[in-house]
Image (tube, rainbow, N blue to C red; front, side, top):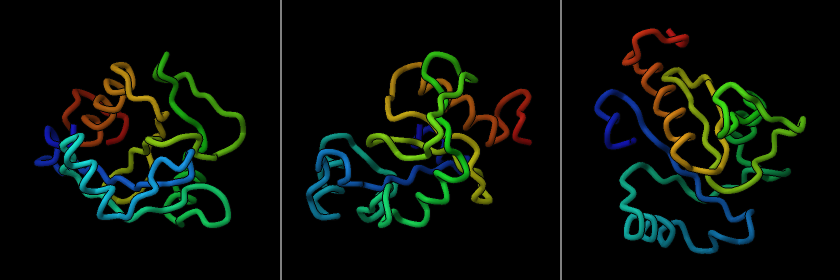
Length: 135
């Protein structure tokens, strides 16, 4: 999706985190090299951060506070919330508009349904959809 829409102003920022079963124990350089080699990642990779707890990076606290619920994979508008804003696993995704306003939060899974919901929302933000609730 990044490659497809980056010329329209869309970007992806990846924030590695080692808070989930120590899945990111490497250095920032090692993590970036692995992501590029294994997955062909070309979008910006930030330094490793904590996303939960007292050491959570401020950007993650801001995102969690702004969007404490997650869009369900089953239905686009079916919201799931246990009242907690905690990041539950790697690959949580937030859609943020060009002015830094969080628009939506998506679950860690990345299946076809989630991808299509994200793409639809990205197109709406970029003004590519016929009608967009974000305009």
